[in-house]
Amino acid sequence: MVRTGYGVVERAGSQISALSYGIISLGSGSMEGRLARLYTELSEITRQFGPTETAIEGIFQSKNARSALVLGHARGVALLVAGLNQLPVFEYAPAEVKRAVTCFGRAEKSQVQKMVAILLGLPQLPPVDAADALAIAICHAQTTRARVGRPPP
Image 1 (cartoon, rainbow, N blue to C red):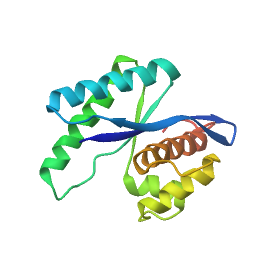
Image 2 (spheres, rainbow, N blue to C red):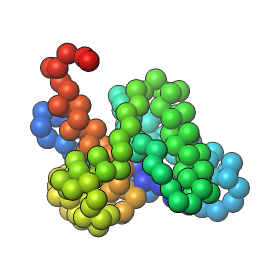
Image 3 (cartoon, rainbow, N blue to C red):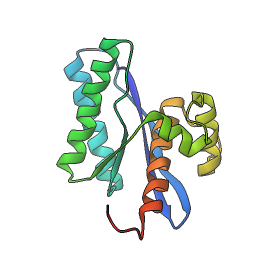
Protein backbone atom coordinates (compact mmCIF):
# COMPACT_ATOMS: atom_id res chain seq x y z
CA MET A 1 0.00 0.00 0.00
CA VAL A 2 1.66 3.16 -1.24
CA ARG A 3 -1.37 5.38 -1.71
CA THR A 4 -5.10 5.49 -1.25
CA GLY A 5 -7.85 7.76 -2.45
CA TYR A 6 -10.37 9.72 -0.42
CA GLY A 7 -13.49 11.65 -1.30
CA VAL A 8 -15.85 13.89 0.61
CA VAL A 9 -19.25 14.65 -0.90
CA GLU A 10 -22.32 16.55 0.14
CA ARG A 11 -25.88 15.77 -0.84
CA ALA A 12 -28.51 18.49 -1.07
CA GLY A 13 -31.76 16.95 -2.23
CA SER A 14 -30.94 14.98 -5.35
CA GLN A 15 -27.72 16.95 -6.03
CA ILE A 16 -24.39 15.42 -4.98
CA SER A 17 -21.29 17.60 -5.06
CA ALA A 18 -17.64 16.98 -4.24
CA LEU A 19 -16.25 18.98 -1.33
CA SER A 20 -12.78 17.44 -1.48
CA TYR A 21 -10.96 14.50 -2.98
CA GLY A 22 -7.45 13.36 -3.61
CA ILE A 23 -4.71 10.87 -2.94
CA ILE A 24 -3.06 10.14 0.37
CA SER A 25 0.50 9.18 -0.54
CA LEU A 26 1.98 6.95 2.11
CA GLY A 27 5.45 6.71 0.67
CA SER A 28 7.81 3.93 1.54
CA GLY A 29 9.08 2.75 4.86
CA SER A 30 7.69 0.49 7.52
CA MET A 31 4.10 -0.67 7.44
CA GLU A 32 3.44 0.89 10.84
CA GLY A 33 4.83 4.21 9.61
CA ARG A 34 2.60 4.17 6.53
CA LEU A 35 -0.45 3.26 8.63
CA ALA A 36 0.37 6.08 11.07
CA ARG A 37 0.48 8.52 8.15
CA LEU A 38 -2.85 7.20 6.88
CA TYR A 39 -4.34 7.69 10.35
CA THR A 40 -3.01 11.25 10.55
CA GLU A 41 -4.27 12.19 7.08
CA LEU A 42 -7.74 10.65 7.54
CA SER A 43 -8.05 12.28 10.96
CA GLU A 44 -7.22 15.68 9.44
CA ILE A 45 -9.73 15.23 6.61
CA THR A 46 -12.37 14.25 9.18
CA ARG A 47 -11.53 17.25 11.36
CA GLN A 48 -11.59 19.64 8.41
CA PHE A 49 -14.86 18.50 6.81
CA GLY A 50 -16.80 17.07 9.77
CA PRO A 51 -18.57 14.26 7.93
CA THR A 52 -21.59 12.63 9.54
CA GLU A 53 -21.04 9.19 7.99
CA THR A 54 -18.26 7.11 6.49
CA ALA A 55 -18.56 4.83 3.47
CA ILE A 56 -15.88 2.31 2.55
CA GLU A 57 -15.46 -0.48 0.08
CA GLY A 58 -16.44 -3.83 1.52
CA ILE A 59 -14.07 -6.73 1.78
CA PHE A 60 -13.51 -8.51 -1.50
CA GLN A 61 -11.67 -11.66 -2.43
CA SER A 62 -8.14 -11.26 -3.67
CA LYS A 63 -5.92 -13.80 -5.34
CA ASN A 64 -2.91 -12.20 -3.66
CA ALA A 65 -3.03 -12.88 0.10
CA ARG A 66 -0.36 -10.26 0.87
CA SER A 67 -2.26 -7.52 -0.97
CA ALA A 68 -5.47 -8.48 0.82
CA LEU A 69 -3.72 -8.33 4.19
CA VAL A 70 -2.23 -4.89 3.49
CA LEU A 71 -5.63 -3.63 2.32
CA GLY A 72 -7.12 -5.03 5.53
CA HIS A 73 -4.66 -2.98 7.57
CA ALA A 74 -5.68 0.20 5.75
CA ARG A 75 -9.37 -0.61 6.21
CA GLY A 76 -8.69 -1.07 9.90
CA VAL A 77 -7.20 2.42 10.11
CA ALA A 78 -10.21 3.90 8.27
CA LEU A 79 -12.57 2.09 10.64
CA LEU A 80 -10.56 3.31 13.63
CA VAL A 81 -10.81 6.94 12.51
CA ALA A 82 -14.56 6.53 11.99
CA GLY A 83 -14.98 4.88 15.37
CA LEU A 84 -12.97 7.49 17.24
CA ASN A 85 -15.14 10.18 15.62
CA GLN A 86 -18.36 8.25 16.32
CA LEU A 87 -19.23 8.06 12.63
CA PRO A 88 -21.47 5.26 11.42
CA VAL A 89 -19.76 3.15 8.76
CA PHE A 90 -21.45 1.83 5.64
CA GLU A 91 -19.77 -0.76 3.41
CA TYR A 92 -20.45 -1.35 -0.25
CA ALA A 93 -19.30 -4.17 -2.51
CA PRO A 94 -17.16 -3.11 -5.49
CA ALA A 95 -19.82 -4.29 -7.98
CA GLU A 96 -22.50 -2.30 -6.11
CA VAL A 97 -20.37 0.84 -6.31
CA LYS A 98 -19.70 0.36 -10.02
CA ARG A 99 -23.41 -0.22 -10.65
CA ALA A 100 -24.30 2.98 -8.78
CA VAL A 101 -22.12 5.17 -10.99
CA THR A 102 -22.00 3.34 -14.33
CA CYS A 103 -25.07 1.07 -14.25
CA PHE A 104 -22.71 -1.86 -14.87
CA GLY A 105 -21.24 -3.87 -12.00
CA ARG A 106 -18.17 -4.92 -13.97
CA ALA A 107 -17.19 -1.50 -15.28
CA GLU A 108 -13.53 -0.70 -15.87
CA LYS A 109 -11.76 1.81 -13.64
CA SER A 110 -11.61 4.31 -16.51
CA GLN A 111 -15.40 4.11 -16.93
CA VAL A 112 -15.89 4.74 -13.20
CA GLN A 113 -13.46 7.65 -13.37
CA LYS A 114 -15.33 9.27 -16.29
CA MET A 115 -18.77 8.81 -14.75
CA VAL A 116 -17.66 10.19 -11.39
CA ALA A 117 -16.44 13.34 -13.16
CA ILE A 118 -19.75 13.65 -15.02
CA LEU A 119 -21.96 12.97 -11.98
CA LEU A 120 -20.10 15.46 -9.81
CA GLY A 121 -19.55 18.05 -12.56
CA LEU A 122 -15.78 17.97 -12.11
CA PRO A 123 -13.72 20.02 -14.57
CA GLN A 124 -11.29 17.13 -15.10
CA LEU A 125 -10.99 13.44 -14.39
CA PRO A 126 -10.01 12.74 -10.79
CA PRO A 127 -7.05 10.41 -10.17
CA VAL A 128 -8.16 6.76 -10.33
CA ASP A 129 -7.84 6.13 -6.57
CA ALA A 130 -9.76 9.33 -5.78
CA ALA A 131 -12.41 8.40 -8.37
CA ASP A 132 -12.86 5.05 -6.60
CA ALA A 133 -13.35 6.83 -3.26
CA LEU A 134 -15.78 9.34 -4.78
CA ALA A 135 -17.69 6.48 -6.42
CA ILE A 136 -18.14 4.87 -3.00
CA ALA A 137 -19.36 8.20 -1.63
CA ILE A 138 -21.81 8.61 -4.55
CA CYS A 139 -23.08 5.07 -4.01
CA HIS A 140 -23.65 5.84 -0.35
CA ALA A 141 -25.37 9.15 -1.06
CA GLN A 142 -27.71 7.46 -3.54
CA THR A 143 -28.39 4.56 -1.17
CA THR A 144 -29.16 6.75 1.83
CA ARG A 145 -31.42 8.96 -0.30
CA ALA A 146 -33.33 5.82 -1.28
CA ARG A 147 -33.71 4.90 2.42
CA VAL A 148 -35.11 8.29 3.50
CA GLY A 149 -38.72 7.99 4.56
CA ARG A 150 -38.72 4.22 4.70
CA PRO A 151 -39.27 2.54 8.03
CA PRO A 152 -36.27 0.57 9.32
CA PRO A 153 -36.36 -3.18 8.57
